[in-house]
Image 1 (cartoon, helix red, strand yellow):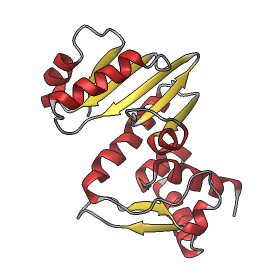
Image 2 (cartoon, rainbow, N blue to C red):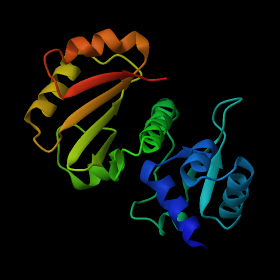
Image 3 (tube, rainbow, N blue to C red):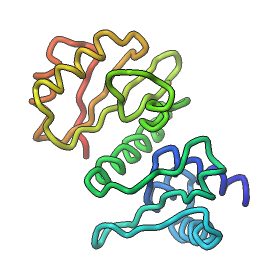
Amino acid sequence: MTRRDTEILEFINRFGRVNIDQISKYFGLSQVRAYQVMSRLKKIGMVDHTRVFHNECGVFTCTTDGAKFTENEKLRELHIATLKHDLSVVDVFLGMCGNDRVESFMTEREIRKNCDWDHYPDMILRHGKERISLEIELSRKSKNRMENIRNFYLKNMEIDKVVYFVPRELMDYLNSCFDGIDFIETRELI
């Protein structure tokens, strides 16, 4: 196991699951090299690879042995219902990294482990002294649920800014849910 192998396992297990494109981008590896590394990690029992959707990249998760090299427990199971959302979180994170905006971050898995909150954002990034909560919404939540999230952010003084990434068709709805709150913004999820 190399240092980079351990870093790859940590990256995978922080998010729970990632695809080869995300590994390649985060570690600056060519697709060929990324597949070589992941094939080796799979062969020695550190990761599992599952192909979920036809004509799409499969996803990598840490095995129990692989998770021992990380600070998080092994992901219990892969939920197909949330997979697109979970991979979108990684894509948004990688987009933020491309803008050199990320000094440190906590994934939802880490937030749940370390914080006793009423709501768990998909991720919290630190940029300078600013703590930015990232939320990815792929489907419309009820007004009541959005009101609870709104109230959570209004009373949580640990979060300086909230950025929602949503499909175009949800932009107006989300904007109406957070109307008048200047530290919450919505961006189109591409």
